[in-house]
Image: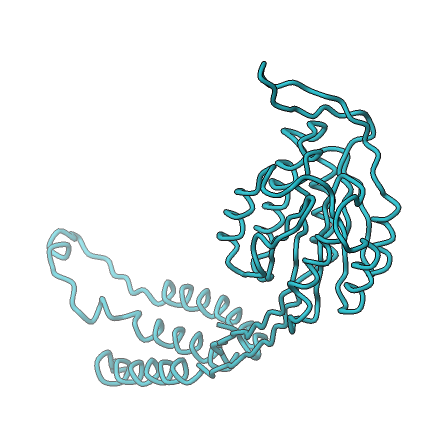
Length: 328
């Protein structure tokens, strides 16, 4: 409840001296007489009129309180809002080639990428998100969807060896573009994550970037890998062995892809930097939410006004008919 004219509530301060005056006057008006013994008087019952003596004054004070509230015009406010959401189409193109087994990110590059991407997906409930994977070839693991529970389950099922080894960046990027080019959504984004240089596929990465630019699709390219040599496990008859590789991939091409499409290039050298990159992308690609607010107020002064009039009427009845006094 709110008040249209709350200044009228200051009238209630006038009751303080009025109540004080009433208490003083009642004390002065007490009658007294001298008697030899009060034992008999103490046994006399008090009349109903004595208990009702102060009710008229209490009713008048109540009437003043209620009138002050009515003058302040109490109002009930009903407020609601209408919200419309415009999501973003995001296709994640994930490299699952053999070098993504490198353990410079923990537990390895692919698992770290899946973990941080899952956190990113959970933070964007209003967006259509899909997944394309690529190595020597490329296929769509999950089309654009708002059912993120299904998407995350499909994300977790991604593993090495699903397709021939290699790094077909151009093919993976082109596949992602093809999956979202006909979408009516105004904002379209591809997050391309890889740790290598293009060495497979029939489509050049820069050609795929030009196609993305034609359809108004931004590409955020993430190069994964520390600047130090990294260990990659491989299976042998004697168990798991390790080999060391140098982290040299085509950053220049990834930068040109991002620049051509209006996106950005990032380098993830460890788990923390990869998480930070996804957070930056999350901040840059905000879902648009339009909110329209409505408010309706209802006047509530009438009940207080009627209650004040009822108090005044009851006071008059008590004062002049029930508690009437006769003076000489």
